[in-house]
Image (tube, rainbow, N blue to C red; front, side):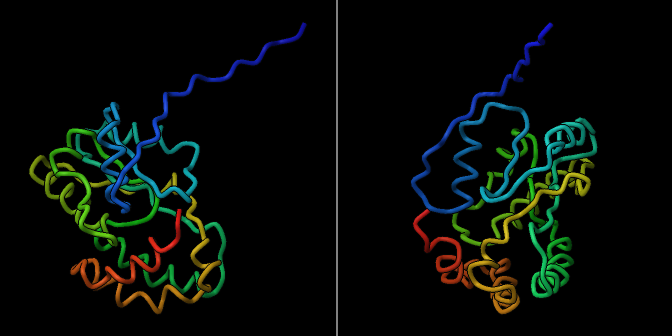
Length: 195
């Protein structure tokens, strides 16, 4: 007797046209049409862990959680990439910014005003800071779900070389505090191609 395989039902997917070319605007555009209780954000060239959404749902079932991030690992390693990771990772953790899937409840996203669309770089930092502040008022905290890390693309390392990010680091650090400092770098590095 032959068994028939059935496919799981997938939720509907919408492609949203966002006129402003920025990561923050794209994330806000997606959030504006989403109808779920939980919002998740990840860069288009990353891969999520198969258990990400289960872990995020479980995490946000906790009353002491306001949101968080999964963290990430690179799709490939080299000496230059490893050194970059070793330098950037502690700085990112310090301000609760990491790669991977950022997540929160929809009402909290709306309450903090989403992502700052004036930023072309480092848009995660003020967003996570606003979530942290909102959570503090309600005795909630940000979570770091490192057991479901996303895999981030090494395409920029492939394109610019494995050591390039270290040269950009001083500008990137300043840009987190003063977004205008990184405007030209962001336009050239993330927004110059015609994707």
